[in-house]
Image 1 (tube, rainbow, N blue to C red):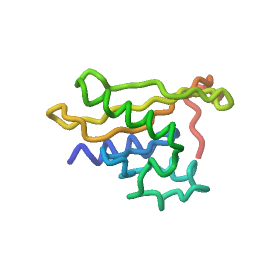
Image 2: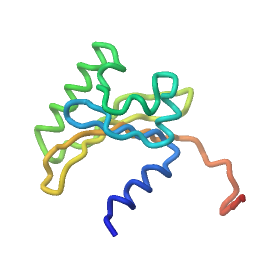
Image 3: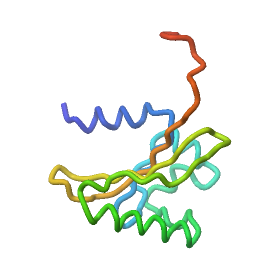
Image 4: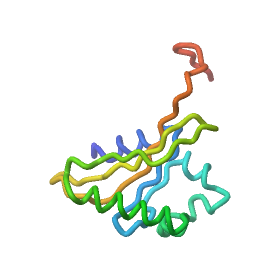
Length: 125
């Protein structure tokens, strides 16, 4: 079976929003959590549209600067971009590379700093 089926499943199961963009800043994929989170801005209808249209000029300049930095070295793959104290999370831009290491796009990664409230191995349903 093609590994992409497994990778899509991992991304779709993630409770954090995942928005994947190509180097033209077009949104090429949103997991269900991202579709829900960005619903008031269009949700799934954002697919194929420019991520830069969702940001102000200063943010767009920062995004472009990160892409430029990603392009300089195959070792440049992660940049801390934002702290959201209300949600206790850090946000990063992550480089996406093909099998040869060439930059093909990027995504925004949310890392929550909340302790899990569920009991260990709790299985409902």
